[in-house]
Length: 477
Image 1 (cartoon, rainbow, N blue to C red):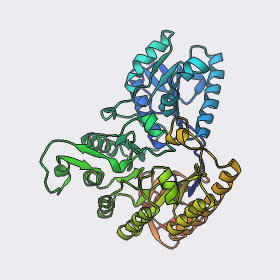
Image 2 (cartoon, one colour):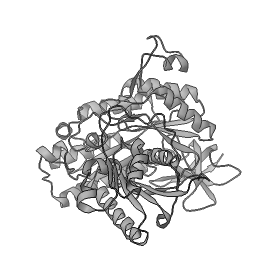
Image 3 (tube, rainbow, N blue to C red):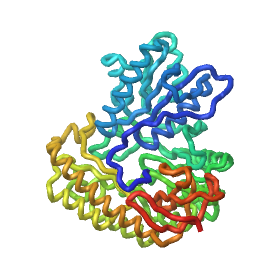
Image 4 (tube, rainbow, N blue to C red):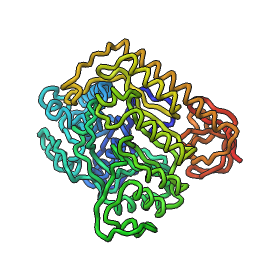
């Protein structure tokens, strides 16, 4: 999720640091690229390695172990990670005892290539093998290369308490599902993260409660497809009247999970990502409408506005079905913000298909957007069966048109807040001025306003006076 209206590419990793354990003697530098799930996975990795004597550091040169948590969803992301590995290896020439490892989706996709062909790393670990890190690190320390990229049908890390890395102390991620069963033809995720599986709701509640007890004010429930969340447990099927009854139900879907968390922690702000249009159910919208602490924001990727292209992408819904869902969202949640993912120039995309995307954007007028030119990912159905036949110049032109239209719509949506009073959760200082606070409203729009006696983590009412396409500007009431 993003606080800007337009995201063309996620351009940088995040070197993650946290509190130190006094008795730990080794230093871990971990950098994460890609989605929020990767950031949360890095927190799980830091927790597992903290028990093995590693403190995290923000200084690459001091590290005994350097890990990069990788993204394979686009070619540009992989190119960025290769450049980081080159930098790590330059530092390793000065510190030859340093060990370097690749985690995440790129590790799963390329497997032994890093070890055997490129000689860039000592350690390769897939997303489902982080529990094996202590053994793998010991192998590396003994002078061996180590690899574990086996995918699991059960692993959720539900019993691992993540170490919160580079946190603002206000917002945190909680993973509720892993993997994906939707075989979109352009997407590598099912091959790098495996089959979809859901986490025990009791462990989710426990983690959320622990975050509240530690002073956090907002959580984001994460999954490749949160709407597919489904947990089967003990108990009888019955009407669900409160959190304890819901938690004992035979089956808990995503709408019920939202209700559990909202009821258990009525003052905690709750967000979620990401939703798949073909799996989102109306009961999720009703749960959002019922509970004020569930933020009124949905990231609803569509990728294209053309039904023909949706079929080629194996998206399992049509343009018309997507529009119907948008209409239902606005009917049940009139103030809900909606963001999109769009791919420009997928295999076989015609000018009419592109115009269909632009016309869908005109209909919805998204608040925010994540937009990309299509890049073929090896091993995906599209790479195996379809020709990447759209010239790069055409992809760039279409992407530019999508971005420009999103900028127009983003400004339109931001202007709707001008003159209104909105509730803002303070996350920290404004990037441009230490005299101003920065926070977000329920709709995920960033707001800045002059400081008073407030503190980070406070909820404040702010009168919006002006805006840009990315920021609301106001004063506290």
